[in-house]
Length: 277
Image (tube, rainbow, N blue to C red; front, side, top):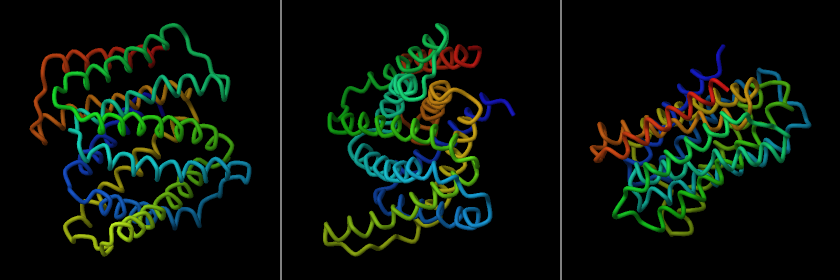
């Protein structure tokens, strides 16, 4: 199966579940439901499929923690920032970071065209966010930290899934572990704020859908990482911001000015350069 369309589908699914998270007020509870959903889906698979090799377990454990940190940072970023402000910055931080880390950690090299593609995608993403006149510095700060978390677990998972010997086994155990951590985060967070760890009934269905979408989206990315370069896959994932811009304009009724349309074209061009190599 070709890597490029698979990663583009993953990008669309990722933007969709992020929009679901943005549109609720109790995001920690929603994330807890998402985690429980992915854990429930992955438990049978973790038992039945070939388990990851022992050499991949350190990466898997660190990645599970980083996914939890990523979720918590994303919650804070969405607390004050608009969807089309936070999402592009969070996603745009990752590609150049992954490209540098992949070169240092696994010795990957990119062609000149691919380097230009990474730069075009990153530049387009930040241009999408630059037009925010009322942006919160706090939200932008958490968005950058979110992007660094994305870059970290992307590189670690890229190494881990290659060591695992079983892509499905790695995905299953990763989402089982990280999924179980989010309900724990809900309980701890509620205790710190002296609130009961209750989840509104209307969040259950939405959280289940969002959790399923997140699982499928990242599962596709992990599969792609077994067939393509980490930096290329990571950069192609960031086309999710184009889908996010459409969702923000249509579903969330956020303004989509000309500069965002141009930036989306630049991102698409960067993705084409990466695909062509």
